[in-house]
Length: 417
Length: 77
View 1 (tube, rainbow over the protein chains, first blue to last red):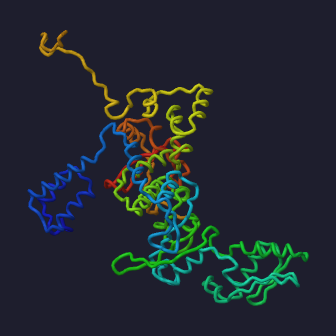
View 2: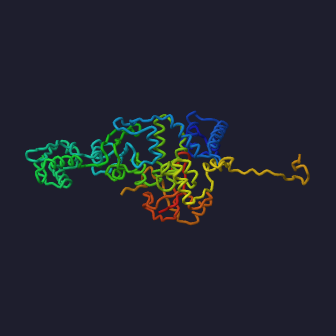
View 3: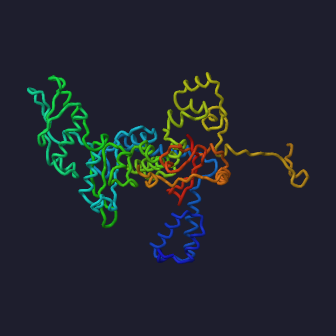
């Protein structure tokens, strides 16, 4: 083996002989390498011990994995904070964490409490100047302005002239050139802004330099104020749902750094299509947006990733990832994202009694009675209710006792006493 | 339109064209087709393929607990 100095062929042979997956084998090699090599006997012992531990982690047939997962996530859940805001990496962006975030994930809320995106930039030279977006500050800012929604108050001052019934917008030249880096002149940008205003408000504007003036058709104080109100809502550049973008320089390797954007508000599909955005790494914390844009498998990955991060953030990283994978598998089992709860998984169970035992008992029993539903008593809950053994663990194994004769004589037969 | 299959979160999807392969899979897990997890026909990850309802898609995930995890989903409307 070329990559490890201290792992010779004999050691490799004993490790490769085990039932371990590739990753664990590599970790065994890594550890042997760190220790500066071992004898074949030691290697054999190590490999056997690791294999034994690995085989122990396998689930036995008829193990109630769902119940175990529920407890394994539920117990640490009791230690989570009721509410925390703040994001480890970016202090400026608040993100819901702890228990509320976990609940939000398993409830599969349509929009999270605090939507955000992590936008990575192209790290290969893709633009005409040959400067990669990810490492060039100016290029990165270009993407920022393409994402962050720009409203009129960010561009200049708005004042009303009641005497002439006019709204006056005094644009800031520097801001314009900063936010429209590709524009040739201030005039060009100002014209564009004036046109946007005309389209959005249905008024005719007069422009001289960076000053734009317009007013209601009929002199009306109320209309004038309404125009100002509506003017404030117009998005001149960027994506409406993204209210703020924070840019950060992050280390990617020993020497290398790249710019990463964090956004308040999310519009995953729109952002993926923007020039300079790396559409292979950019993510958001809204699993529904991931589902819509990348599909059900990506949503599953995102659920695992997000739940794990939420637990890790609270110091509960010893929850085995298999429990979270099970949750994600169940949530995406039908090709869409379903919540865990009354409106999702538990509410769509086949058994009437199982549904009734979860929530809104009377409604379920009443509906079942009206429709003449039957219960096959296959699941755990319904069997607990009726007092039958549940079909998991030893409950699903039939042990048949009886007599047989081993040698045809009376020896094998139980006595009548 | 961006190619979603390039995204890190999206594993490799392949439609199983060969009916025998599908049979093998079902036999291996001892299940009916309808017992498989589902995937919608209009799922973004299937955009490049011509998957029809009833097809079985093989998904090769980069597993967290093993090297690769091969799972199957049934295409539905």
